[in-house]
Length: 113
Length: 113
Image 1: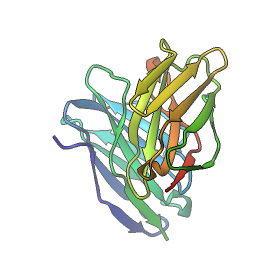
Image 2 (image 1 turned 90 degrees about the vertical axis):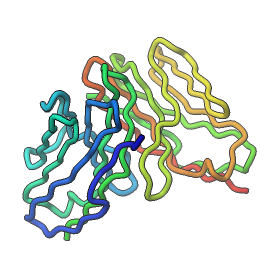
Image 3 (image 1 turned 45 degrees about the vertical axis):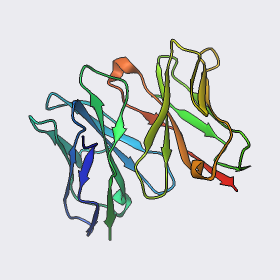
Image 4 (image 1 turned 180 degrees about the horizontal axis):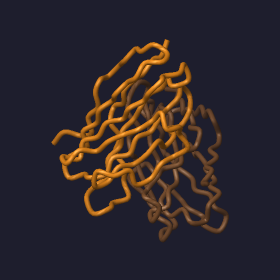
């Protein structure tokens, strides 16, 4: 049974560009949350998707958007990249039935130059 | 919104000693408190969690205690081993608010052989 998977592993982009990150939740999980982890800090909540809709959103600008597909996988899109967007982007999934636990994927390391 | 503070930021112990990491939270509505271990370059791994209807939970060498009145919770690791060396994050969430996790700033634990 595969855990949470994310792609790509690493990504380098230039300021002003757009990026799409992908996440596949663990089998039996239907809720996907995205977090941004800057170097040396704890993860910060971006948003959460459930039943293909954004259910909750953290304090991030509209440049950050997402999508959830019928198979529960999810995408995170970031437009007009800034140097400050450089971080590890983590996806976490939660079991069906609204469990408490969140299990993280390995993350995508985004570097903006 | 919720604010989680974590102390200490770094902790160095001798192998076999105990380690204690403490967190405080601000929102009395928070009812779920997980702890994650993150090794360098790897995903945060859920190691133990506690819900607000429980005061203490133990899993082998790891235990978590919760004081709802004081709004603080702690991670206790006994008989530390070098492989316990990592960054540990506490988090809090309100189950009825979609499970958004608010993380502390992290504690770098170093276990010296």
